[in-house]
Image 1 (cartoon, one colour):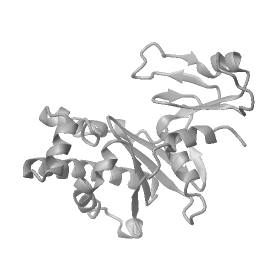
Image 2 (tube, rainbow, N blue to C red):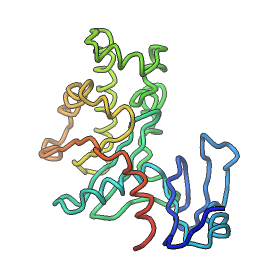
Image 3 (cartoon, one colour):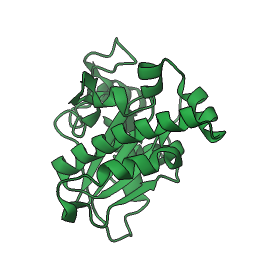
Image 4 (spheres, rainbow, N blue to C red):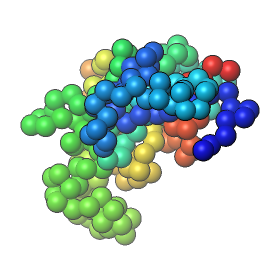
Length: 228
């Protein structure tokens, strides 16, 4: 058993839909059995401390905000780019979760013949070119033109994803996390080029895109779900 002496509560980021109020988890893709699980109730019964849950991308955004909250900006988009495309929304200092923690699921918006996540995530290389992201990354770091071209193509799709977020939310401060975000220098130029076609020039003036320098942003955000 795990002791909880001195523990104020337990915060958890879920890679799927979760009702933040009830703590019921729905449709976790990587855990098919979790179709409607009262995880909050199960854990509170086991550990006798408050439990709070939210979507993992929301936790990342909240953690990124917690680490930057002394700065002037109070609204940001926390975007995780890895095997998927997740987005958490901080608006005027508050996390926007939606009814099921699913606010900001831009990756599932229809795009071309699939969805945004199919093209604007680390799965792009496997989906389109049947190559592993790791292999393309290593080749790109070595300066191989074909690999650099594929990263530029990825950057164009990510730029389109960012434009969709901007049209929907008009927030021009992005914090990027996830495995693909670490390769930002390889697709930055293509992403910014695509963003330059945004219809409302004023909306992207002062646009800031940063890479999270904290590997534990999601953990910090999950902990912040518990009121201090």
